[in-house]
Length: 363
Image (cartoon, rainbow, N blue to C red):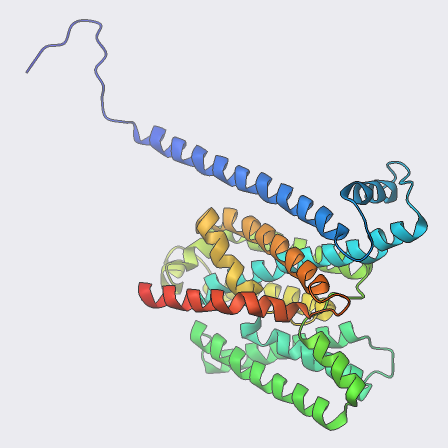
């Protein structure tokens, strides 16, 4: 043993608290970087997407029009160009961002609650129920014109989700029973939709209904944006309030219960919240698949599995993704428009196969 000279500092083992604080600081820095980068990318994506189309519009024109409508000066644009930006492209692009964010958040929550990496917002049959409600209004004329297509879709989504809750509760309420009940409801309402279209719709109605069922952001207005955005904000706040609970569900419902989580109540609250958001989004934009399936996995690769960071990053990733998917859908075959759901399926199916492959490897 060698003696140390007086005044010489001896290096000891690292203090655990210091290491924990350093790791926590790095996580906060990483989360803040992802937040800032995601918001900047989303704002830039919206500004650039609005410029793409038959009418020649620059990013400066977009900023000028937005500033003018916010009371920050005069745009100097012609009424036609201002109308194209503010009344046509901007609501559609913003609704695409809201729908992408909402569907991605719903998929993240459902995959955590059900402990199923292949779960997405449509596993509960909400999309099929909304489709049936819309078709009943359009084709059968239920409501006598007093009920809009969006209202019919929303009511159909609620009926489908109520059926899923009833079936899953009757069968025991476990996660696999919820998934199976959702599959049954999805098949039932899909069959009802096909039956109504085949027996009662003419050629023009069939074309319009099928285009809406595949997802369409055409013809939306600011009212759709505000309603969907408001429900998205409420849903995101509720889910963030249950972030630690969702982390606990990663270890299974038994482990979550041992940690003090009220499993049944939490599952009902979060499933009802995500079903409400999905119904509102589908009622405005139609059935857009694969966003809630693919984006949560991509976000986990960036932000990790902690839901306090994961949920905002997933929302931003979904928003950016659907903004560009919608831009591609409305311009790739101009002047003909491709349904948004077709594009998301073309992108999502290969990603779905990749998820299946990774799931098999880790099983």
